[in-house]
Length: 213
Image (cartoon, rainbow, N blue to C red; front, side, top):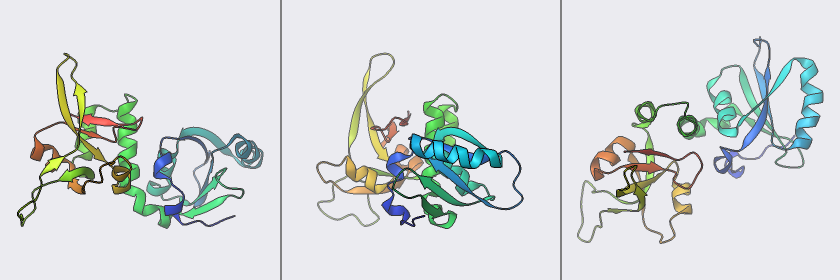
C-alpha cells in the first residue's frame, strides 16, 4: 500500500467521477477504512475480498464517497484502488482540508441532479468562500486599481441575454480557466452576489455547475 500526499492525487478534478465504495452492512463497532475502486479490475478483486466479509458495493461520485469519510466518525482511512499500481491509503486527517470543497460539491451535485432545490442550495452555500477572476474594492484603494470580474454570457428562459459572474470552488480551478492571467480573488458568495448585483455561476465548465440568479 502506498502513501501519497493528498494534494498530489488530483482529487478535486475527479469529484464527479463515478466510483464504487464498499460500505459495511452492519453498524461498525470500531472505525474501519473505506475502500474505493476506480477501475473494473480493482473492483472485481475487492468484491471477492470484501463481499464475503459483509461489505456492499455502492456506485457514487468520488466527492460523495469522500464526504462520507470526512463526516462519519466510523471511517479512519481512504483506500483508493486503480489510480496507481498499488492501493493508496489516505488518512481522514489528510482529507480534512478538503471538507468545505467536498461539501460544496455535494450540494452542487445534488442540485444539478434535481435532488435539491436551487434556493436551498443557495442557503447552504451563501456563507462559503468562492474564487472569481477579477477584483473587488479593497479597504485601501490605490490609484490604478481595476474593479472588474470575468463574466459568462447566459440566456434567460424568456430568451433575454444576461451576464453572470464566473466563480470557482478553488483558486487552482479559477486559474485553470484564467487564460488572460488576471487576478484571482476569494470572496464570500453572498457578498459577491450583492456587490455586483448580478447572478453568479459556480464552476461553469463542470457537469455539476450551479447558478444563483
